[in-house]
Image (cartoon, rainbow, N blue to C red; front, top):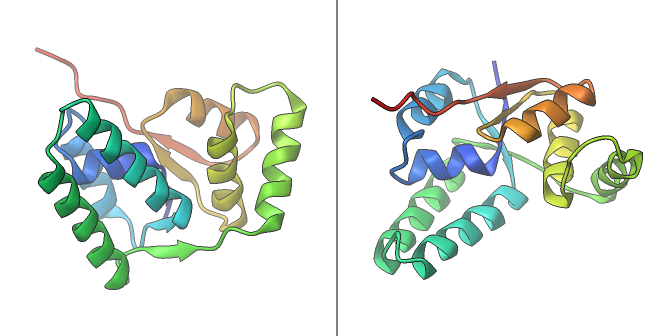
Length: 146
């Protein structure tokens, strides 16, 4: 089985977070996870936010980026292309005005849909929107706090 990996899961996989163990387990079960260059850009943005808010040091953020880059270079992820058709599909879904989709989430769903794989996300609203659009979605939930 494969899936398109949303940035929320990628960040949890590469950075220590409450969802990290579940993200790692989910990724290990996949044959070859699918990501896009949009995922890479969003990971950089998330790391930058962590550094600016002092949740992570610059050196740690750079190590995460190096590790992600090494994993991409080693072919651990299938890189799905993004082109004009994906933007058109995302635009059409947003124009329906019946989901809480945001621009980049609509693009992620368009890429996942074109690749014919479900999206793996930690974002409940994104998972609901995917299902509303008749796309497969798997929601990773944080473990209960004790």
